[in-house]
Length: 313
Image (cartoon, rainbow, N blue to C red; front, side):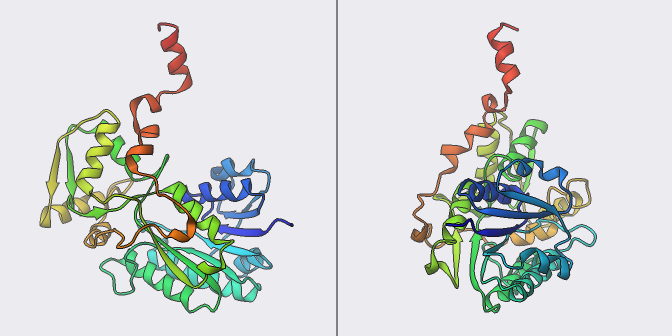
């Protein structure tokens, strides 16, 4: 059977890189549009992957990219705005453009990454823009599937890895919204759901909430990341005006570790009210079973560290 041509928008990101590698291993012909090829060099060596420089916000360029594809996957998303890179442009406008390009290019199948609590009337710009994007997909007339994960964890994530890094750098962690609840899901399970849905017509026209097996408060997650990385730190909870003040300060610093919009998103618990969708045949991985493989101190030691240790240096 000939390889399917699958266009993955956002294919060089955290989830995208894992999905592209999975699809390539299955023999699919994958096209990954990127702004610059250099940051996507980890994908260039994959034998069935074509990494192309393209502006996916340009309608003509996007239409040409997806024309004739067997499926399009939209994983593009941001957690914070910067300049012209707004939630509305990245989430809602690009999704509408993707729908238009699929219709014009004869693409029937569209997989779309959303988020738990996505809602056009949600408490944050992030969740509202995600909700608007979902609405565009649902109204598209395409064979769509929408995935709504809680926070996604895995090696190289910007969640647990960030908490662990902060714990190693700071003597005390001041934590806004410590009681916010999450049900983290492993990147491998999210990727499996996406990949398997391509062969499951029963998933068309449906939304799937994706969560791991356990619910945690933000304070519990930060404590887990710190302790697993070998940096036990006191956690000072910030609520109300203090939490807002911290978010305001952090959103104006390089790296933007937190914003008031992030804080607003956390006013709604990111948890599922159902088990992992049985359609995908997955027993979701627990945080405790896999996170030490990249958070633990020994996991951060490179091969030269091990050689020096064995040599007594």
